[in-house]
Image (cartoon, rainbow, N blue to C red):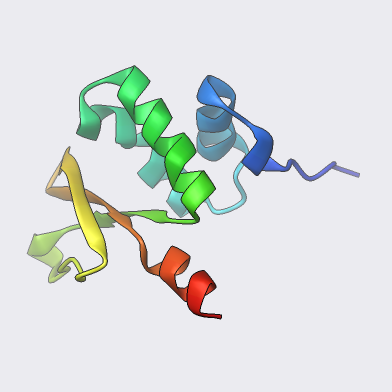
Length: 98
């Protein structure tokens, strides 16, 4: 039996490794893996990932060529192949309202 990891206590490279290798949602894992390239700085990307986890936000890949558009709750982080990487604050806002 596999022990579930409480990723909210992880920091730095351990947190990034969890999201890119151990996270059950492999689509989200691939989005998190794009973060350092979109930001252009490993250390800043890791600190941002920590803040995303603390705040309850989510990373979202937007591909305009596929008809994707960011929502007002999303903030642009950087360029990815064929699109942009955003942080979506709506999960955090929903938690505060609930």
